[in-house]
Amino acid sequence: MTNAKRTAIITGAGQGIGRGIALRLAKDGLAVTINDLVRAQDAIEKTAEMIEKAGGTCRVTTGDVSRQADVDALVAGHVEAYRGLDVMVANAGIAETVHFMETTPEILDKTLAVNVKGVFNCYRAAAAQMIKQGQGGRLIAAGSVSAHKGGEWQSAYVASKFAVRGLNQTVALELAKYGITANIYSPGVVETPMWDSIDDVVTTFENKPKGSQFAKMLPNIALGRYAKPEDVAAVVSFLASEDSAYVTGQSIVVDGGIYFV
Ligand code: NAD
Image (cartoon, rainbow, N blue to C red):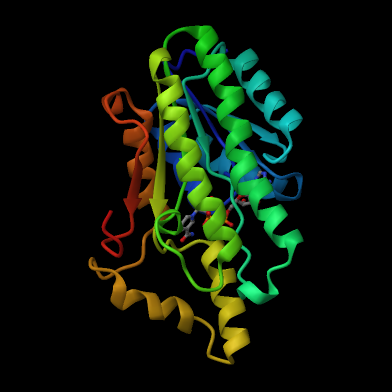
């Protein structure tokens, strides 16, 4: 039980953007439950340690967002501990970097399972609780500039992020009557392990120096620097807040000026 006024769940919070969002929402005063895969147990414990050191309130859980039972248990555990749920951040996602002609049906299935079904599971379980509470809520998910524009090497990923944007718009329409908003944050190039792996695959394939794919992105960014997880977390902080009450169905692009919606 906590005295914190509002509470949030953040998935995929063992590293990268999810960790940044968890730290930020905890700093904003929300009591958070953070999730990641079982294999990321150490990483998620590290995030919890960082939150607690900064004076935040945090619970740690493991589970796979593509499995409905895991997500239902995640929400149920959160509600039992904190007596309610105000914000769901469906952040967990994967990006397989591979040419379209080498993208197998298995890669597509796996990507859609985590990136789309994961958001679907999180939104449904959280919304059921928010409707029961009767006080509205905030559904938030990870989009990407890839939810707006195709990109080489990422057919499955791009398909999944377009799907998330479409799903989010429909959820926003259907749940508005409950005071529940649904928005996605759509980063460009963020310095996280996900981008390290994209760079690694492309440079290996093209026999180029490590880091060169990442470096290739810089001239396209108007603000002249890559994003840090904190840049994305600041936008999520707004979307999670009561100040965003009149914003729904949107994809907020957080890319330093690469892509204009
Ligand atoms: P990351 O790979 O650094 O971290 C993702 C985290 O999600 C990891 O801790 C991983 O263990 C966890 N995860 C993966 N599958 C999971 C599952 N099935 N269940 C629970 N947890 C799972 O990624 P990131 O860069 O921090 O990206 C976070 C989100 O932002 C993703 O949805 C990604 O698509 C999106 N995004 C990232 C960028 C970027 O430049 N890094 C750009 C646009 C969008």
